Length: 86
Image (cartoon, rainbow, N blue to C red; front, side):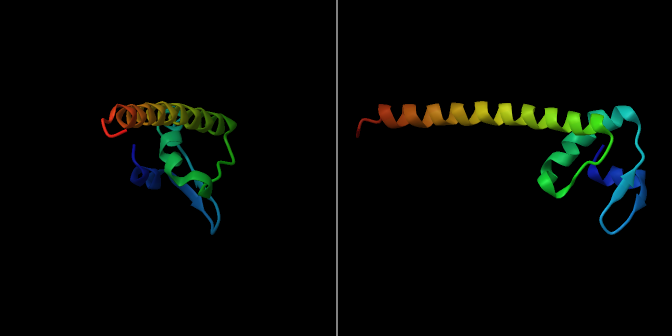
């Protein structure tokens, strides 16, 4: 499911709110990841389960990025200290 597909599930829209009608499986499987790039510009009002799932996705992505950054930092440090010029 892509962001373009969400348009097909748009039930109602006002100037500051959009209501979507989705199957529960799609709601919890795909939508949290589709929301991540929008950061704080989108606020999920309900259902609470989507808010929770989106939070879990953020924690998961944060863990992956933290591990990646730690690995890159270790590689850079190792390269710096192993450089013959230092």
